Amino acid sequence: MTINEIRRRLQELEITPKKSLGQNFLVGDRVVKAIIGRTQSLKPQGIIEVGPGLGALTDELREMGVPLLLIELDHQLARHWREQKLNVMEHDALRVDWNDITACRGTIVVSNLPYQISSSLLVDRSVAPGGVTGMVLMFQKEVARRIRAAHAHSDYGLLSVIAQSYWDIDLVVEAAPAEFFPVPKIASRVLEFRAKTGPQPAKMFLKFVKTAFSQRRKHLASNLTAWKSNRKKAQITEIFEQLAFSPTVRAEQLTVAQFHLLFDRLESTLPEGV
Image 1 (cartoon, rainbow, N blue to C red):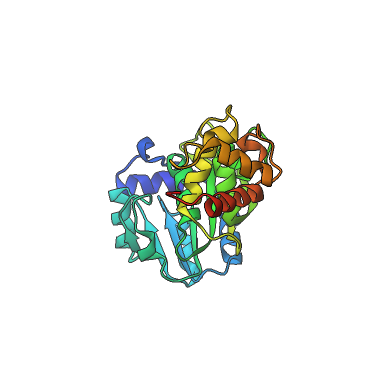
Image 2 (tube, one colour; image 1 turned 90 degrees about the vertical axis):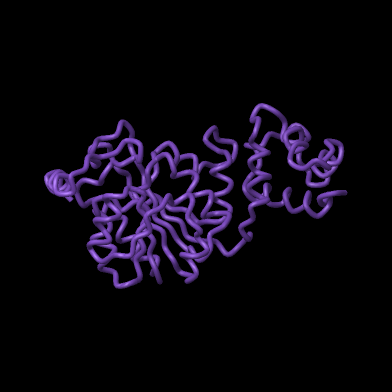
């Protein structure tokens, strides 16, 4: 969509971009073509677009010939897409029951995500993906760096471990501020996610990783005493020794594979209530 097309559609709908909903609409077709091309490569059986907005992606997605569901929180935009005979869920994407809308495996999630929900949506779809097997999502560039960061890097943290645990992640395209309307202050980056066949998503693992990074300056063993009430630091340190981990290791020093190894060992050696 050109800037003139965006302004015309905004005028027709009698709306203005809502900062509270993170509405920054894509301008031009460079980024749109990259997102659509990568979505097609995932061979979707169904597509869910979160926040279709004015339809820069929607107009292309509907041409793919697979079931398309739009999740749109803005009432006026949701009404507009219903009038276009599309399947619309007027809801907050973070509060939707995804089990109800992703019953068909092979569902692909596509979105120029509002920045304020991007991290939460990624984590939710990682630990409880339903039938979602791929995603093509826009992030603030800083968040995208954190998602793909390697261990021992300052950007490495919760998002890195959770995303890399359950997805193979690839850079799709960079998006400059000038490619949006209104123009944001920061650059964006689109990432592709392909579901891994390795570790099974687990909300308990998410709780474990959150606790591990809860106080980054503290040693990991100290942080993990707060994970479950029955964990004693001496027991955790003993398991660290068995795994050849330093007792003073910090969370950001463990690889994703080591996080899963430690989680599995703690769960099997120190089950709840012991």
